[in-house]
Image (cartoon, rainbow, N blue to C red; front, side, top):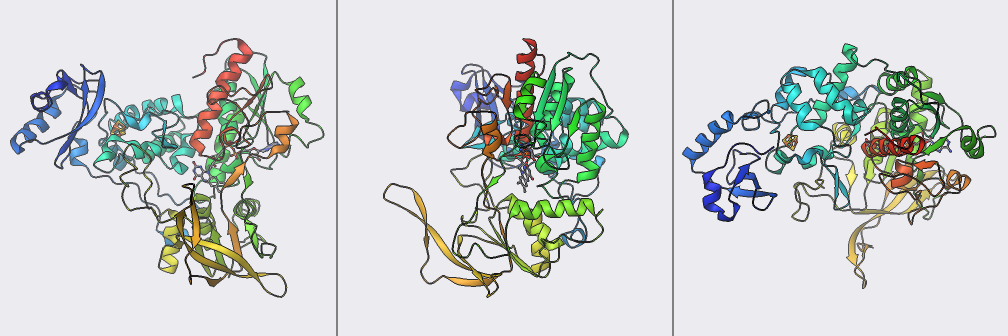
Length: 567
Ligand SMILES: Cc1cc2nc3c(=O)[nH]c(=O)nc-3n(C[C@H](O)[C@H](O)[C@H](O)COP(=O)(O)OP(=O)(O)OC[C@H]3O[C@@H](n4cnc5c(N)ncnc54)[C@H](O)[C@@H]3O)c2cc1C
Ligand code: SF4
């Protein structure tokens, strides 16, 4: 909201901005960056602005007196950003427990005071800028819950959070936080610790018992089948159940959760304490879950039966077709897809009750090469270290990102900067350095007489433009070398959804082999069949899956009832 303040200096300096209202912020640095709303232009602009020191202090005190809903008007000037620390790497490597430290409500409340309650809060916009999410994709009401946490009104903060996010305990743990990447404060100071705040609100809610089953008061008599129990399927089921429909979730795995269960490792997201807890609540609210049912190959639950027994079907089957590396020697034993490795470990740990054992497919005493420098690769590094690997290296074909935003990657775009994630921190603690090697390509897998992997031949590359302007990797002459490796894990990204179920439902696909359905509508070419999550948009993020699951539920409800009140 525009505030009742119009700095005369702004009009003096930028005469064409008459009637400006200060919306944004003042920093400790010069020049001060302010965000103005120009009543004349009807748009917001960011202006660098220099104040004389005496004016700056009167400006500061004026800021304190501005009538505003904001908890602490000068919080961002006085308080440094401080996140809740993770457990020390060498300590957390001894177990499969979450890496996060316990809640610290007082510290989080103080951090919430840094929020400026911006007139135009980019943190919750959820746009795609340069192909990446900028701001929260589910439009969390961030300034509102920040303020409520600062004031100690945690239950009200929870109510705000629940309006947009079905599972803040998942996003609060695993989301890369595009909200923080686009936080206005982040354009000149470190961003507000939004992710910590979100996670603390919901963790406290669970601990205090504020989250109780709330089954719908009335049932509509309509039945919906949701196929796939990842975050898209769960969000969709939750919403449709709230609308009063009878929802059955079909899952081919033995446990519910999709990549929340078998994908993201336990140390990032606890399966029993966090994922199962939410699934139990959904069950108590009336959602039915059927596991070990693979739609498309199951003899009982055929696609035809789903379409006749249910009034609508929502497909949320993910995009789990992994990219392979078909180079010389790829038939050696000891080369595995990252998901195979990660799933085997999580399943083993859950089945064995975290008894200190590891599955047959393991990294123990091996030199491990994780091929792929992304987040899935990071999970492989963390898992290999916990299984007691001899060494681990992570090979990345792209260059090392810059330490700070590049000029062509300005705020509020997602910051493509170098960061140490938990797996790399752990590898550094054990091996003394970041395990990632940039601009490196794997040329061939080397095997011994028995066909077992014994090493990799790798080389450095540079990206060179061809005559059509495309960048292609080119080997740096003389850089070829071999490294020992008895376990290679392929974390090279995903090609799209598996096609069998798509064919079984006769669904049209787009050019990337995803199910063809417009974002926000989610209707496929088959009436009454909807698609959401990675299966529609390609491998993405948990928060986008929640966005899609909610939207598909809304459109499915409209299809069933003729109108909808779902957000
Ligand atoms: C290793 C790894 C780590 C990741 N880490 C993060 C992270 O830290 N943060 C983040 O935001 N995102 C992360 N992601 C991405 C994120 O997990 C996905 O974008 C998200 O889970 C997609 O949700 P979804 O519901 O669309 O699909 P999924 O979570 O893939 O769930 C799809 C479900 O459908 C089931 N299914 C498929 N076909 C059938 C069928 N025929 N019948 C019945 N069931 C079927 C599958 O078994 C699966 O359970 C990670 C991904 C991977 C692979
Ligand atoms: S979280 Fe950041 S962008 Fe959002 S209102 Fe607060 S300061 Fe502004």
